[in-house]
Image (cartoon, rainbow over all chains, first blue to last red):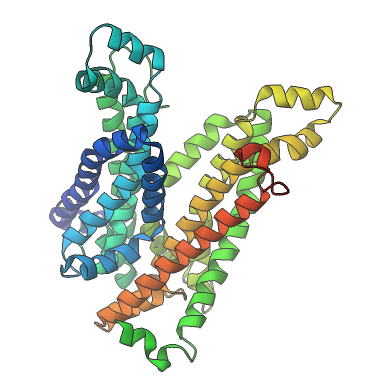
Length: 216
Length: 228
């Protein structure tokens, strides 16, 4: 390890780290926002459910590098545009989370729903105040998977030139120099661990009735 | 785009489409085979005995956060001087492919075995089956759906990462993407991406068909084939 190199490059590495953070988190947030209504519809409609989950599974099949390369063709963007990466990762997050949200809503016991209805909760209020909070542990488990795998997939975008920590890997190979590669791996793993912990913490705050651990 | 596919030069020779597809499939199959040899026994053992659950869950989670591109590049630089010629990038690539494919296979087979109804296992024991017979005659067939879902994610992971490994000179369809970018030929890149996508979907479909054939109809609520 050449720590003087790291010190010298710390400004650029910090910049790449911020890019990496944004590219990992924003797609998951958009994916979740889209997956909540879609997952809710999927959970209620039998035929639609299998179609929607099937389509989601199909999207998840496409390798990430292929998706990064193909999106400019679909979106009309330039290949270097970070938007391609955001859209690709949103597609993955959505594909994963639609199933998670509908499974989460499924996990709420029918007795609880009956009790809520008997207490006078109408449909929308019951969904927002009873079903969704009770589905948080399952949804959080899916979010953890989405966010952690995103951190790893983002680095692949270095091969199409999008700025993020993956550029340290390509630079390391070109220079035959281990320091940037090791630094990149360590920062990626640390970022994944931090975001994973953050999802756990938020889920814990959202479910105060659960005394112990969430999502496992 | 179609012009690229219909150009005869892209279908013959040493880096033509059929050769790249075969290379991609060859590397992927070797990696999948090795990953199964490691992942299945461990998963079955942990599922059957219930020992080591925390360990495999931890290993699986830790491996998921490792950036595959970084790992490949790291191993290529470390192993570069050790191996001669092509092995200098083939061995590191295969190691990473196997490393990424083992966790889904391991957790899939573990979860499949652990989810088998204890009453079924008790019944098998009551019929006088020995532990290994219970594992192979009862637990394994019941666990097949989850084992296949693990195999499916492992295979997709391998095909996807083999594409990335083209960056360190591995053959296969990733070559079209990486070389296309180096030559500023977007059509070649897009063609490579389409071919990889189609290959992944086809292989995924094949695994689906195999699992339909091998999973007992008693587990899937489909009518047995003799009646259907």
